[in-house]
Length: 168
Image 1 (tube, rainbow, N blue to C red):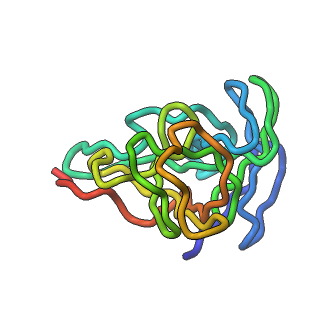
Image 2: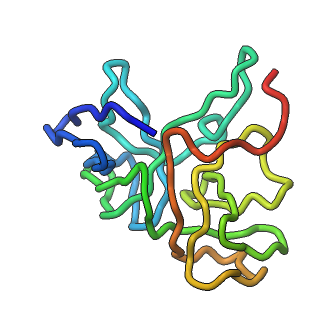
């Protein structure tokens, strides 16, 4: 994987392997929240917002489009800067809305509640898998409908694939 890391609005130059940004928050975000990082027309990331349903992988003109996502490392209130990581191992707010145990390597999609949701095989068609579970132990019990901070391997740019479905 490679990324050309831009210079952010506040002059934060990113080197390869440093996939964290200081982004202007448009809402209150706490550590572990999953956010959408809109890419500006000049290729920079300057803001973060709550993910929308459309940003998670909607088919339009036969193309499954989606956004760039990150996990908040240092929280912020609206109008202030949050530290956001777009790739790597992070502690993220996650849950499973179905009675399904989460196993190591389980895939997650962003949801509109700033969480990572376990994709149990009945997920949103074309949704981008942005995280793999790498937490302690081999399984998290099926009683995970209450969000909790857990360790995941995160890739908010390319992701780790998509939930099955048509792209047209």
